[in-house]
Length: 147
Image (tube, rainbow, N blue to C red; front, side, top):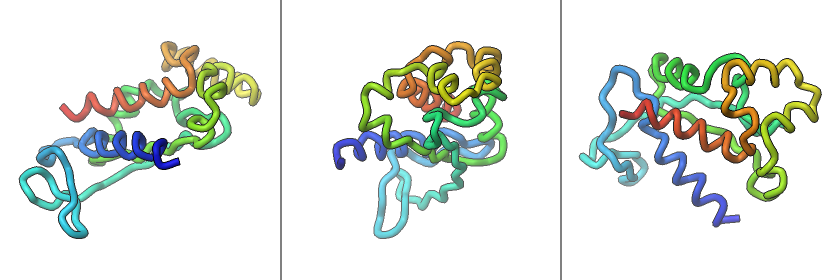
């Protein structure tokens, strides 16, 4: 289990600066000094995090049927958050078959046909990606806001 925790922790650390709005980014890489999170310059970094759930039964991020993932990332950054906690459906890490199934299948099996239609409009490139890749795409778009 520790091996599957490590990549998630790494992803979380990569996302810490991803959603900074007008404020400057902390000096990277981040580390700890005693009980504090600090930037490379040794100054304390205060995290203001938002949650983006994807651990529920569809095993995909909520809201993808309503807005484009890039728009969601921009809105979160505009609200002043400097990190996002992306919840992870554990069974995607423990069940390779499920992880490889497309987002469309996950939504259709739950009768979420309106969500399929919404994703088709707002995030068409995600609809037929494997569930694990949908998670990776969200990370990519949040990383775009760190530059």
